[in-house]
Image (cartoon, rainbow, N blue to C red; front, side, top):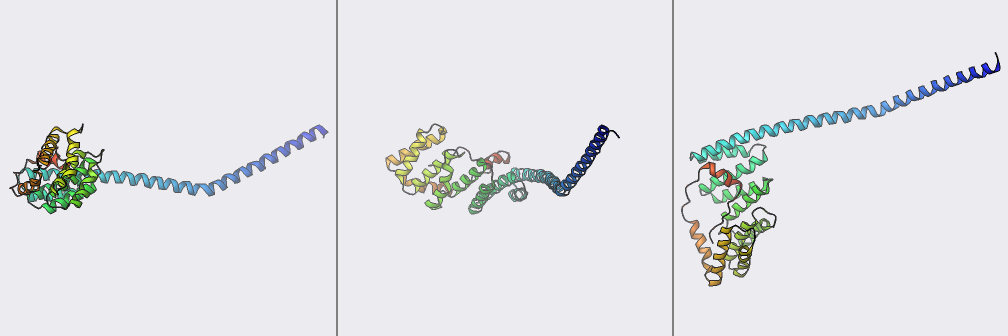
Amino acid sequence: MPPVFSTAFGATVLVDVFEQVEEELRSERIKRFARVWLPIGAGVGAIALVGALGWWGYQSWQTNEADKASAAYQRGLESAAAGNLDQANAAFGEAADTGSRGYKALALMQQAAVAVEQNKTQGAVRLFDEAAKVGKDPIIADGAALKAAYLLLDTASLDDMKARLEPLTGEKRPYSVLAQEALATVLLMNDQGADARAMFVQLQLGQNVPETVRQRANVAVQLIDSGTSGAVRKIVTEANKLPAAPAAPAAAAAPAAAAPAQTAPAQ
């Protein structure tokens, strides 16, 4: 065999050997990679699948709970409109017991409204407080907390009322103006006229204060300046002894349970 051919043939054989060895090494690396990472990949895929199925199941459950709460809540409104307070209370309780957090807060507020109609003040306060805790929307949560404070206006201690109202007076809180008015009223009823007057003056001068609140603040400042503000507690106490007004139609009561109107107890 000529030397050139022999050299070429030997080089060809050597290249084939190298390629075979490289192929075997590549195959071994793939096998090793598969042994290490395929179980991990399978586990991650299984977790992702379980998570997706769990999320879908949770969403379906939430939708079902919201549907049940909605139906029960509507029955409560209809029963209240018909004057069947016990049936209304039971239906609102059913809505509150579902997994729908939004309906739970609203239903608790409606139960509190029923308790007010039945002169069960402490029960109403407890329900409003519970609604304030579970309500995710500040409009609902702060509304419930403010309604509870209104019910305790003439009976709770000054420290208790401050604890309830001061957090609601923050600049970004939805009912800050009404909470300030209620707190000023509490201060006035507890013979802290100077502090009360300062808060009422702020309400007089505030830019985003509803006109009705501004007018009540004007009256309060006049009472303080005339020295007759000491009668405020007696006026509020006697007003609370009067018979409750007839219940409003439930269709109108539903929004009221979610948020207090721009009014407060008479000064």
